[in-house]
Length: 259
Image 1 (cartoon, rainbow, N blue to C red):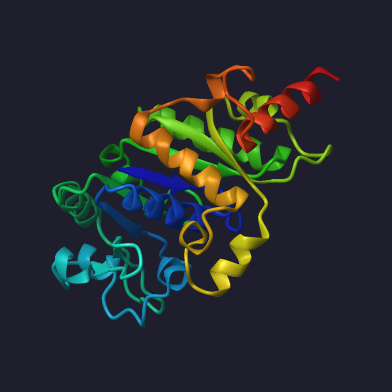
Image 2: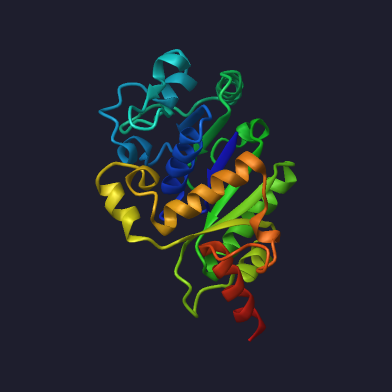
């Protein structure tokens, strides 16, 4: 179970959650995508689901069975446990949160990708995760706040990786080595700025499905391969890693770090 998270909104967390889940599903794995954002749940919007009548918090609070709330996505075959706009009421109790995540892990999916709201909501759930994937942008402030989040996860013995999103290769951006150094944890991938992401989002289709030829889709495919094979691209030398986008980013970042 992977917790896709960030310290603030707007960094592309939901985009990455949706497309990583779609890529894994289309590679032949069974995937459940969970929208745990209680403030601004957008997974349903991004994939074009109709109006949601049941959501994650209905399950947490015992109002419905988890299997009744899971919605199949017709285009990708993904199973989605959506959030629900307009949810009102008291927050789930610690016992309800722990029980929910226990049920989630017992469903038997190959991968469970959880899109969380910014910060660390439901800290009692952290022990259920296999990994936290912190999304950052290539700027100092974003990575310093990610450092604080990574240290909190480390206190709870949760494995942490970082992914850089919306990378454009500009001189004023942090290089990939700098991002890894600032966050103090492993940088697992870098995703480029890509206009097709905005276009596909407006169409309510994951960009990985909308156009697999884009730079973002290719990087998402590489990221999915990290999870299916646990290959660590960041550890490859430029000579070994070929000429893909991520390889070029690493080489460019290394040169910038030497100046």
